[in-house]
Image (cartoon, rainbow, N blue to C red):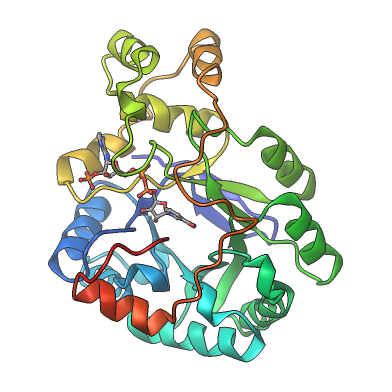
Length: 297
Ligand SMILES: NC(=O)c1ccc[n+]([C@@H]2O[C@H](COP(=O)([O-])OP(=O)(O)OC[C@H]3O[C@@H](n4cnc5c(N)ncnc54)[C@H](OP(=O)(O)O)[C@@H]3O)[C@@H](O)[C@H]2O)c1
């Protein structure tokens, strides 16, 4: 399968579609998902320190039979690890869990503006990029004011802003701003997230019927046609295969207009301009490992 690649502002390229692994359990579940993805042609895997499955992801990549350099691996710095020294330490810990010498993309998970540390953290990511241990660096969940500040107070424009984006939250203003600065947008919860009902929307069901595809495939194709990078999550091999099988059909202008009409500016996740969960990453990982509590992203 020929997966399109996106040219980033630092001259690296990344696949336009990948596998998200938020909520995939460490160990067998995440390893099976990553293996199924790689077998089906995925070359981008999106994890995070918070997901408590970096070691499983690393092991699955190492045992996949595909050379490490053919996989584009993303991980993220958790909120409790903001600050220059903390960020350097958190990055080392992620690399160790992943069992790799480098990641392709390192992202700040949330700006947590109330602690006012994201610029300092960004300087640490610039240092990590210079060392070659992260090829590209970027952010997640950064609204326009926080992006403006990063750009003004550093030498590096983020390569990526990974944000909640789906037909009910289309983020046009933030997308336009990112495009004007050369920042590529990557969509999280692209098919509406776990437990959502987006895929049952009658407009999507109708468009899917017309193309003999599923609603999930229609929505993923919508992201692709908008030029977004998209990382649907599944732990089921049939869905993993289905979600990347979106390059043999096209949505018409009318389909795209109908999907555009579904925007309600409704978030599934928290509002980034106020969100800040300060739980220590180690505590979060332990709690997840033992299935304690329902943890926020
Ligand atoms: N940067 C951030 O702050 C942030 C926040 C959230 C997520 N993310 C990243 O984005 C990725 C994707 O977001 P997400 O996991 O929230 O949501 P999502 O990919 O929109 O949706 C995942 C849900 O859809 C189900 N699903 C997958 N394929 C399907 C299909 N073909 N038909 C029907 N249902 C399907 C999955 O279930 P099964 O697994 O049971 O198949 C799961 O419940 C995450 O995994 C993570 O890597 C980043």
